[in-house]
Image (cartoon, rainbow, N blue to C red; front, side, top):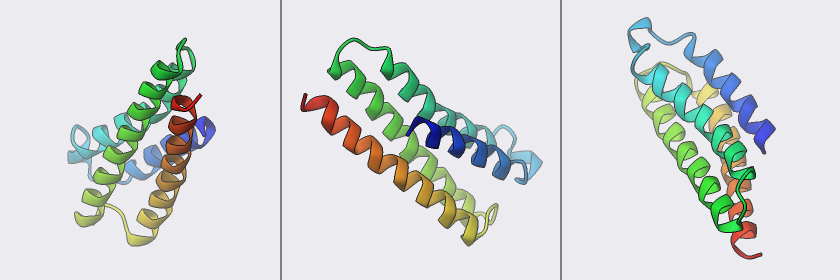
Length: 110
């Protein structure tokens, strides 16, 4: 899952390279930061001692994924990405969020 989130970051960086330059401090920055946040929270959670703490960081990673999805929807509405790009990225996010949900359940049910 962490490797998938790193691949997602790369996809987001490549996508946003084609966004309008005036979005550098707007959507480009937001998309990049929240995509990085997914993998960063997963990494940080692995260093925690308790399952409750690990689950907290898994929840943060999930929340960042939802933020990312919201920003992709906005980007699509503004015609910064096409339908095909959107569908591909949404599928990647859904795969990650499904894994995050399963991980969180396992962390809390141990």
